[in-house]
Every structure is written in C-alpha cells, then in structure tokens.
Image 1 (cartoon, protein in one colour):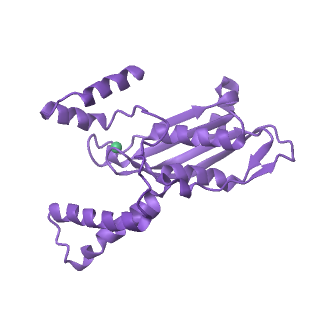
Image 2: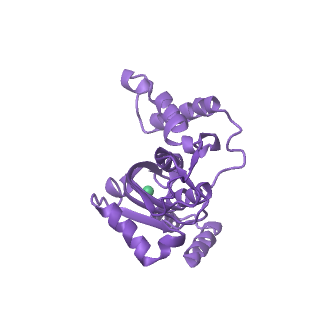
Image 3: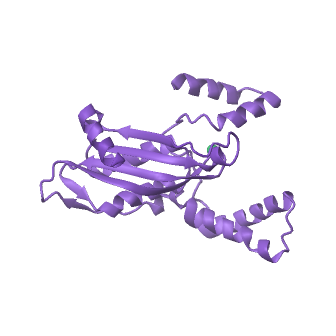
Length: 236
Ligand SMILES: [Zn+2]
C-alpha cells in the first residue's frame, strides 16, 4: 500500500505531459489508495461564505454547460447552474464544512448493556472524488458501549456527515470509524460499507453488479468471534 502511494507521488511530481500520463491519470481514478484519513482541503477552504461559493459555482457550471454545447437560454436549462451550485454547497458537499458536523449527545449506559449494538442498513449516499458521480449503498455499524451510549439516529448522522463530501470509500470508512471511536470513548467500533459506484456502472468498465465492500474493525472487533457475530448480524 505504502509502496503504491510512493510510486504514485513520484509519478505525479515527474514531468509526464504526454498521452501515457493522461492514460495513467485516468487509471489512477480506480486506484483507491488512502492518502490520509483527512479529506484533502485547502487551508482557505472556508474563507468564502456559502453564498459566495454558490455564486461562483453557478458562473463556472454555466460555463461548463456552455462549452459542451448546451443552449442556456432554453427554459429547461436556464436554472440548472444555480440548482447545481446550491446542491453542491448546501447538500451533497455540505459535509466538507466542519460546521455541518452533527451535535452528538451521549447517555449514561444505565442498563449496563455490555453486548454489541448493531445498527444496520444505514443509507449511504456519497460522491466519488475521482469522477464526481454518485456512490450509494448501505453502512452497517456496531459498537460495544464503554460508559456511554449514543442516540441511534446519531450513527446515521455521522455517516451522512462524512458521506456528504467528494470521497473514496476507503477514506469514508475510516473517517466514520475514527469519529465514532472518539465520540464513544472506545476502540470497540466496527464499520462495514457496501456500495455501488456509478463511475464503475455507467462509464469505464460498466459493471452493473459490482458492490464495493470496505470495513474497519477496532478493538474487540479484531477478534474473530466478535467480528463474526457482527458479520452474522448484518447478513441476517
Ligand atoms: Zn470514481
């Protein structure tokens, strides 16, 4: 994994402005190595307000539509740049902004519940950062409570927050897992994502039936019997 990353970086730093370079960049979109757990953001990522971002995106998206040859004076198309800008900033990429992070309330584990809690079938809608096409599927999460338990819907909220970014599935998995470990104060967290990628389905290799599965097993979930109990629960 590290070796791959090294090679890719070396490659990017090199001067390969030729057809081979383009082919390899194209292919790199399918190599989902995790560069870091953090989404790569510029230091000035939030200097612009949401309104300023939407205005700028509207202008640039209009330009893209114009370049591909669409007649922006058509009734059906006129409002599209504004709609796309709003959708990017307020909906599908709203999870880039730390302000969107869900407020999490925890409760005392009064019942002394010591077994694993599994929340399965959480809806997952994200966006591939290599092709800007949807990723959609299900997230399954489990944890073994230490002192605190979490409101169940908050698990869904954490998934949604990290999914609402341009993503690769591997990073999304780890981000959800690490956040839950931090919130819950335990390493005993499992995250399992199964998702379809529109960039695999409708372009490139065009495989409709591929499902990409990623997982992260912390603490007790690294033990086979605990992991298997979780896997049994989410398969059922
Ligand atoms: Zn993709």
